[in-house]
Amino acid sequence: MTRKVLVTGGAGFIGSAVCRHLVGAGVSVLNVDALTYAGNLKSLSRIDNAPNYQFAKIDVCDRLAIVEAVAAFAPDQVIHLAAESHVDRSITGSDAFIQTNIIGTFSMLEATRAYWLSLAPAKRDGFRFLHVSTDEVYGSLGGEGLFVEATAYDPSSPYSASKAASDHLVSAWARTYGFPAVISNCSNNYGPYHFPEKLIPLIILNAIHEKPLPVYGAGANVRDWLYVEDHARALDLIVQRGRIGEKYNVGGRNERRNIDVVRQICSILDRLRPGDRPHEQLIAFVADRPGHDLRYAIDAAKLERELGWRALETFDSGIEKTVRWYLDNEWWWRPLREKVYAGERLGVLSERARPESDRQAGPSARAAIRAER
Image 1 (cartoon, rainbow, N blue to C red):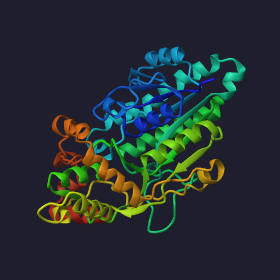
Image 2: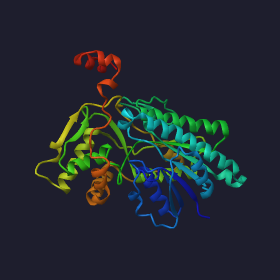
Image 3: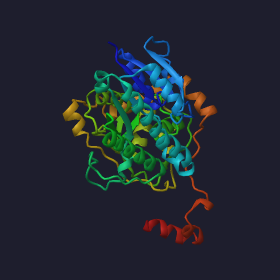
Image 4: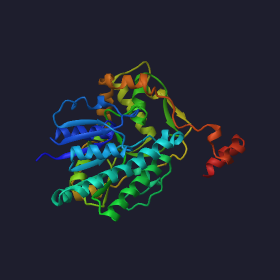
């Protein structure tokens, strides 16, 4: 019998990769997405006419619509990816993050719990709900160590705080109601079909257009990079074989400083599409964003040990594929750059939005206050 998976947020970056992976594997998929600014059905053009793929435009906060969609599709598994995900946007527009990431997750939990309770015992025993989260819930690492599943939560931004809250809701539903939920926490994803507000696609597209390449602070912040198709495979494994009530960290073991990521993209473009000058000369260091965590690094040993997952892409191979994809697929990104997001700086606090202690101090005093935090 064909496995049926409901994917929320399936028109987003990670969600579309999950849908493409599942449909390609012969799974029957219902993609539920509200099609906010970052949702793009063009990312699913490869599977749009597949007989085992369906799409429904639904906001996860609309519980009645979710209840109806779940009942009609009758999934064996749910992969919950729908979320507001860009840290910079959460700094100046946190309301959407609270609504989608917290209220939306609550709505999904209650809608799918009611469905789960209605199932015959055999099908109920096989049902799984996978909540997809982020390593940002753990806060910031120093120069050493890795995030493990037992790392205490210490979110720094409205985005990571909203994801931490949603993680806690899922854990509570598993403990209180015996709901068959699993949580995954991933490192920074990259790859094809990535909305151009994020670091890697922003740098690629700005470099193509010979625009400044903005790097926060000194570019010393470190991220562990995970190729999105490796992540999609991991999520499929977790929803099928992950232990109920457990968490699984998903990381690529590819730590890089932001400045080194930018320089590597510049080097690839110098080779594939040389300009009048080296692309690295476009780098522009800009004021850091508030609450910018220094370092993230995932220990994926539990996932590797229990489920046999391994990342297939190194950062070198994955970033080469990614740059080539953007060079070859202008049809996908050009409408976004022209009509949705042109590359402007996001998450900049106005003077009025600063903490009172900052606003009452002079420029030099504000710098000292920030340094002490």
